[in-house]
Amino acid sequence: MITIRDETRFDIAEREALLDAAFGAPRFAKTSERLRRGRTPADGLSFIACTPAGLIGSVRLWDVSAGPGRSALLLGPLAVARHARKHGVGAALVTHALDAAKHAGHGAVLLVGDATYYDRFGFSARKTGGLWLPGPYERDRLLACELEPGALDGARGLITAPVKGESKGTAARLVHNDNAPWRYAA
Image (cartoon, rainbow, N blue to C red):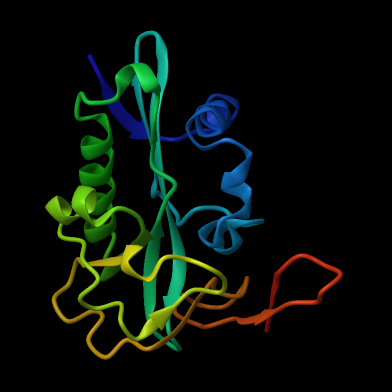
């Protein structure tokens, strides 16, 4: 039996081991990771799938700005243990996460992923043409799902992490120094 529940601090080590097994070290170089680095997921929107034997899946949602003044969530990473793949665990996690986000009043979710997998949940590139990420990514993999119709109408600009202490939807300015990692500044 598979259970999906809120992630707790006791799940961190197992979750990180799952992510390492699923994506390896290259996951830390992904552009989406720049938006997550040093931050916590959106309140109440971090989930794991588990069996009596342990953790088999994980998904988290992160507050972002989809252009200036437009709040959204970023889904990812989604990971399922190799032995549990092809059994609907990933789909159950995504469905649960989207339902929880909608219930919490969020209007849209973005992700970088495979359109052929995520289209069944309502994701497409239809509303992401005016948005871009703070680093390299494959344009056709930037997808969005509106939880509230029209939430991304006219969305345009850099997808950013909100500045700590500011309300959702407040865009941060991305700063890069050639001798230092990417960081976000007010």
